[in-house]
Amino acid sequence: MTTAGLRSETDPGPPPVLPDGLVAVVKRDCPTCMLVVPVLEQLRDAGDGTLTVYTQDDPRFPEAFDAVDDTELAVSWHLGLDTVPTLVRVEGGEEVARTVGWSRERWQEISGLIGLGPDLPDQRPGCGSLTQDPVRADELDVRHRGATLRSRRIELAALEDETEALFDRGWTDGLPVVAPTESRVLKMLAGTTRPADEVVAVVPPDLVECTVEKVAVNAVLAGCRPEHLPVVLAAVEAACTDAFNMHGLLATTMPVGPVVVVNGPVRRRLGMNSGVNVLGQGNRANLTVGRALQLVVRNVGGGRPSEVDRATHGNPGKVSFCFAEDEEGSPWEPLSVERGFPPDASTVTLFPGEGPRGVVDQLSRTPDSLAGSLAACLRTVQHPKLPLAFDALLVVSPEHARVFREAGWDKARLRAELRDRLELPGRDLVRGAGGIAEGVPVGMEDATFPKFGPDGLLIVHAGGGAGLFSTIIGGWVNGATGSTPVTREITS
Amino acid sequence: MTERSHPTTIVLDPTGERSPAARPRAARPATLDGLTVGLLDIGKARGDVFLDRVAERCADRGWSVARFAKPTFTKPAPVDLRYEISQRCDVVIEALAD
Image: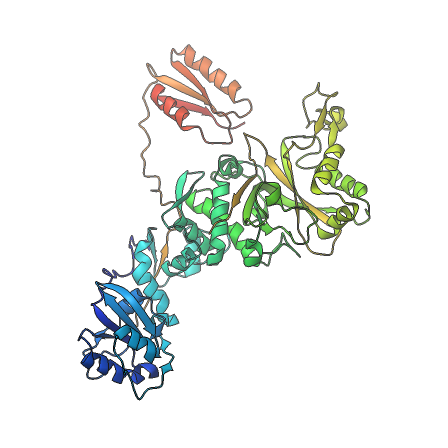
């Protein structure tokens, strides 16, 4: 493998300048183009002599014309053709009118001539332009737009296995990645309206300015589709804020990483999973968006395990941890609305979380009993004797949520009830209490500690329709020295 | 357009494209006599104990010492702090871990 340092495979040169007058693009392998040859002859003979014919496949077609060879498809590509024949009127080098296929009315309108193709039907649809040929479209895109990409080119040797080469380069999280070819990156960038060279964030730990293009390259690696890119961009922005503190989250020895919760219409548009197996495998958008964020941190930021990432154990979610909230089935307002965004806004909320753990309660049918179960389990986040230091994200399943819905408990009520149940007496928490050295400093026996700070418990609704279980995702150190959840709107 | 063979695959570098370890290390001084030693406490537990002792040992040898502290060990040192250390010190000792 060598670093090619190329800017594009081939130099496309400047865009072609179109001659003024009428421009027709045809190909021999198109019955409609064959059909309009007599019309082209009429235009040549009766017009003002400014007809220029470009041919896509055979420079000798049409016979009796000195057609311009466009077998490299440069003119056709710059015209953005879908169909041949295409007739264009050009004035001062600019296109002012266009029609595709054969339509006597439109051709007469554009040419200003009447009586065109008297023996032809009134209209006939055209054929596909060769620029749309799947075999050529990607190559044309790279040839003409590849130079806009700024990333260093790396040339993989002919005999190198592509997948192995990307592992060797150190670009993967331990799973195979998709090769970020120019063509794939260009397609990925079509998923956003943001310019490729716009800086999205400064990514830790190396504090590298990361452009939309670099995010797109890593989104390709992760297996994203172009429509996923705006979600990844928002997640990268949120992760790289001072409040979220991706640097600390990466560097800590604790088993935590960014957890991405997606809200709003984008969930449905991307087919994200908020139901059965919501935190598990199987959904491309969930998995690849979370993975792309981690690959940006790894590749752009330089955050790799055993280097700045010092996690004692880590957790499987550090490959990817992203899911959507089930808003439609929820008795409560979505997390994004709770955090100040309108219901029609699509957002990502990043939470600094460890791996998920289950809460089993199949017997509680009253909200008090179920809140008691949830509180008992929430108390154990990181350590049952450590209050206030760690936040938590509670994922309530539909069957558990039903208990609260039927009792009329809104989310604020549930949170207040949990808070009441998580007022912990200092005598149970001090160091040595219960024979356990860990805990709050001795001398605080008479104090009372809430397990979570005022904003320390996030609640979302997600999961399959069957199962009287919920899930707790424990947090990392909260506050100014740790990480605070961050919500960002997903824009196009 | 002619069909072209693709003997190689060209991919885009997904990294920050930082030059690999290209920056040379600063030359190590032969002696600390006459130099200022910066002692940086990153905020990890008992880092201060370690640095207090280092400061004593420096004082014994007549080396001047300047003490610094990061606001929190979980975040990179602020730019201003890094600049101040670079301006006031010739060498730096960090208490890195607890």
